[in-house]
Amino acid sequence: MLRFENEGLRKWLYFSAIAIMVTGIACSTLIYHKASVDCSNRMQAYASGEASVYPSPDTSKQYLRELELYGGTANVLAYQLRSWFSGLWRGKRLAYTLILITVLVSSGIVYVARRLPSRKDPP
Image (tube, rainbow, N blue to C red):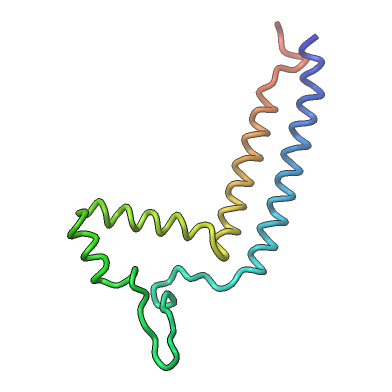
């Protein structure tokens, strides 16, 4: 009895995976085309005043030196990891992050659907 119910579940899971993939690709394409220029480059991470350009305080060597002084190398590495991770959710990198998540979720759903027992499997 359970094997016959799995066929409907398998079809529903395949349909869900396709729907998630199409929606994720469409959204990531839209985000990619609408996103502003990526600000991950250090040369772009400057705050401009009226007449001159000032470096952002969290990217200066003095700031990194103070981080290392108070927390050690682990503090600097944690800061860089946190900056990298927060950078994944802005600009064009968000589109890349979204497409990766979409592919992983869709692949996981297809994997689960393929692992369901079918009518042909012995009991």
